Image 1 (tube, rainbow, N blue to C red):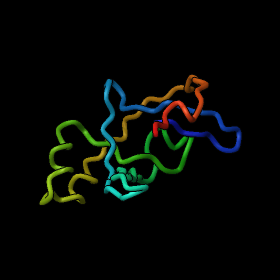
Image 2: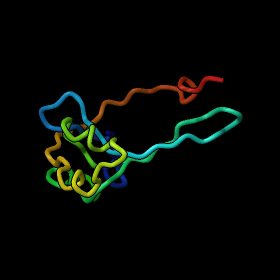
Image 3: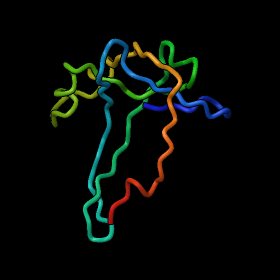
Image 4: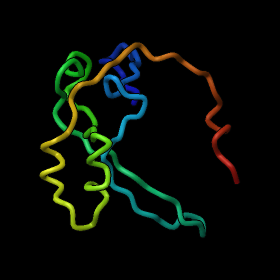
Length: 107
């Protein structure tokens, strides 16, 4: 996750402490655009906790790997999973990669 700090636009890379993969809770659906089904998504957030509070008042809802299956299960209990959300984040100043926005768009 990349976070901009206040008006200075300092970017930070944030991830789960001690993990190579960060699992972020979200919702998605497909919408039709130009005759194509395009995935649309939203990342769920919560009040910032731990060290993330130093750079922002919100943070993504981070899941433990063991809770991912419960999150995507249709009959899962979202409030139980939210209660187990991780807050142990590590962050550092992000490295800038200058790429053209068109590089990711294909027609």
